[in-house]
Image 1: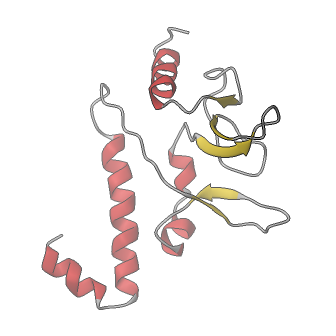
Image 2: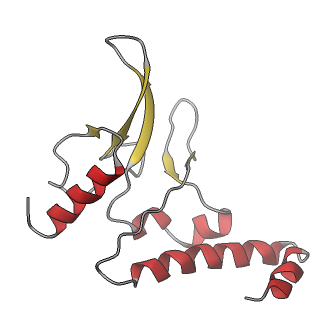
Length: 138
């Protein structure tokens, strides 16, 4: 898409959301077809589409069009959430990765890949663990 086309689309209201959704999806689809020796990591926010009392989390998208048209979370075998929590031992704020759901989110990994539900927030460890699992090394 040329810059001029993009600028014109931004002035046409609803059409800009169509373009944003299509480009977002096209990016994911493009990455899915890259060489097998490449690792692509998408980093995104999550959104609560439930309530404060009964939260339900999913990947945040660029708008309702993409959310309603495509199950974005369903395109991924691994969705690792990062969490901030207060440690029980020293009341310090700490961070961790969550590898599987607790029932109110789309966090997931292939069964057997990660032994623990919570792991240290280390992307190299996550990528190495997934690669070993997918290649039958674990």
